[in-house]
Length: 89
Image (tube, rainbow, N blue to C red; front, side, top):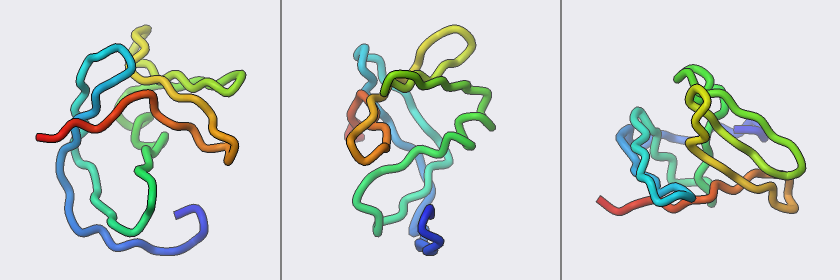
């Protein structure tokens, strides 16, 4: 974690996220860590999965090739919030 604390992973699986445009994306190899109060997405993992990202003016865009697959907005705490929601299985 960013504060040098270790967190216990209690499971690894898949998560479905409904994106800003209504499409549903599935993320695999996701770690379930119950202790953080927020869900986190690793930009390093996105990069390792051939996704690119850019940010400017408080907006984040994540691309697969030239297609924008995720968007986010910067919150006052300088973290980006994904424009989408998790989907129950």
